[in-house]
Length: 305
Image (cartoon, rainbow, N blue to C red; front, top):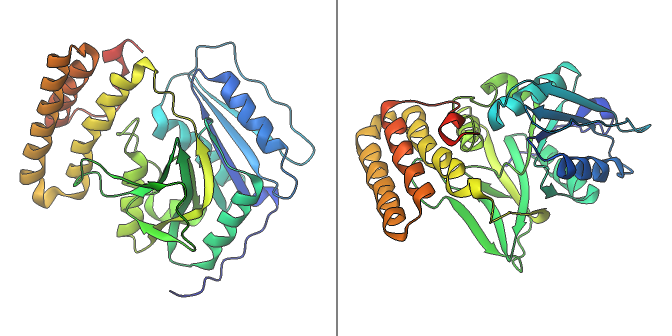
């Protein structure tokens, strides 16, 4: 591995954090306030309100941490919403860009370590921390077009120094640069929700960069298991988008992979029918139909969202 020549300027104009809000004002506000309490790092915070139905977000700039609120009149999905923030951050001169989920938390010290690790390697295109979820440590994952279970997970007791190369970096805390974006493009809005980070990372790899996580640099992510959308809307997008990923990155073996994913989806559909999981079974049925027909992008109308 070659030693990197990147120089990180902690000046606020060079470091942007993008937060996406969709009907989660309290969570987003709490996340912004936590970032404003940082003492050494001075990021510019970009909050994208993604067509929320709430009363609206309002933030006051602190002396050292400016906040830009970007309002979208409609829900543009994870990819489209974050692209609004990324574009504004690049326009403002940010060299380093961090996508941060509002339900994720990373300390200032760990973010500083992550940034310093990034500049050590000049061939890394995106980098993330280990994500603590429950008792497990999520360390990125494998190609979503080839593997049903893509996640690399270990016990939180695991200690691994340095970096670990992966096929994709978790999107909860995702670090990349303006130069990488300019070379490979923005998040693909055809995915709308789920899979766009895996697709971005695949394009990073194709461009000759590497994707990595720092297992000993930790961030926390709270998963709300009882969210009713997890068994319907989330299940639909996460499965449908495997077909899109295969079309984009495995077209030479699509004739093998597409039947495999159809059978996998049918298994999920039948399981849902047998167990009386109507929302889940309907989600997989629609995901198979749209995936095979090549119907991608925003399909929230299927779920009255």
